[in-house]
Image: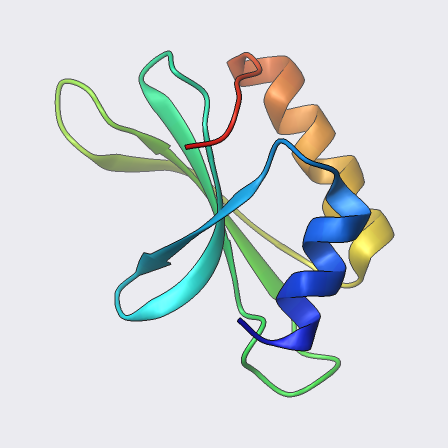
Amino acid sequence: MNRRIKNALKFLGGQYGVKVIDCVPAIYLDLYNGHDIEVFGFYSRSGSPIHIVVWQVKPFREAVEKIDVRGLPELKAVLDDIEARYGGGSTL
């Protein structure tokens, strides 16, 4: 796990975990209601956007929302909004 992921996890708080998705570590949150959140892009060069994908996992896996952000404050604000709209949960 690289420094950017560690810093993001510390900034976001304890409910997020790390899961290897498509061979790359990503920040992950299962909302336990048929949706989960995947955050990736931490291995790109500094200044590149961080990508957020909200997945509907039932009845089949489908991306329902994709958002690019820049910086940890914007990442946290967008994730807080997503959790409010899709329902909060806890880590793996």
